[in-house]
Image (cartoon, rainbow, N blue to C red; front, side, top):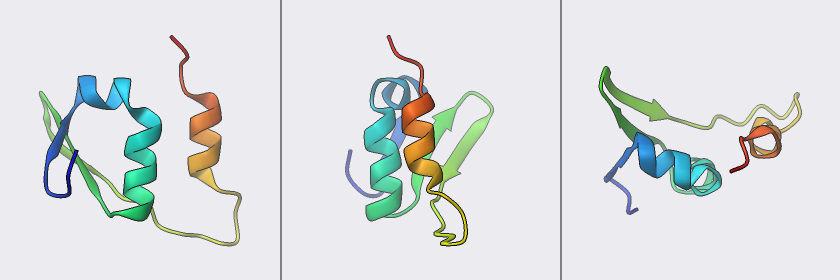
Length: 62
């Protein structure tokens, strides 16, 4: 998925870690859903533990 492209919900489910990493390194990631387009943006807050790592650990395993 290149910058400027829109992820589908299915793409995000299959590539969750990649989407999070791209949001962190490339920039905001757009996700298309039936209710609209959502933007995943990572903002660094160095006063708290890294939420991206926490989400990757807690993600559903198939």
